[in-house]
Image (tube, rainbow, N blue to C red; front, side, top):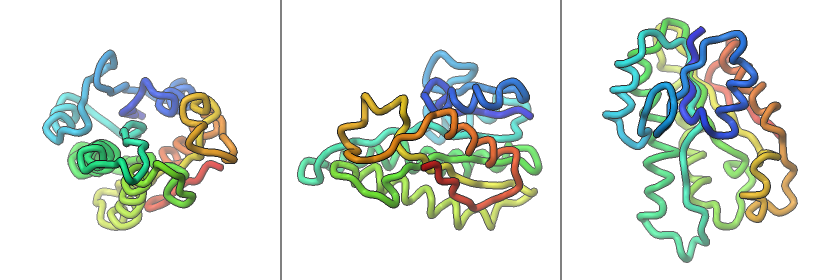
Length: 199
């Protein structure tokens, strides 16, 4: 299986590669230094990426940014980061990629614990993640050719605690390796329209 990993250089992207790389061909996509370059905030860049690839059986999107700020300081420009990257970047990958993916292929998007367990300074990221999950549940019914669409919703990673832990007081962390298993379930399994929680 040819698996495209968008955000391959990140902790989650690498966990998917570690979990599945020995059994499948992994194509690493990112802004720079990968097998193929893509700017997920640009539909034109996403289209160009897919046009340059011969055959893709599964797509993982493990990328997307958001501003972590108190609501009183959050600006429309700050919020656009989450909208254009975390939300539209993932949605547009599906909208464009559905015309390029092999029959029976799958998309696996990425959200996070803040959808269901909000935190201070996390309104923008929560908004984007919630939009992605709603899209997954509804769009999965309309995909043709046996295509599947799921999302993985992990808690804070062990490996990311030093960077993000201050935003998540009292949260339990999960190892990236266990998160990688959820992506494997989405890619090699048969479910669609599902949110795979890793807690």
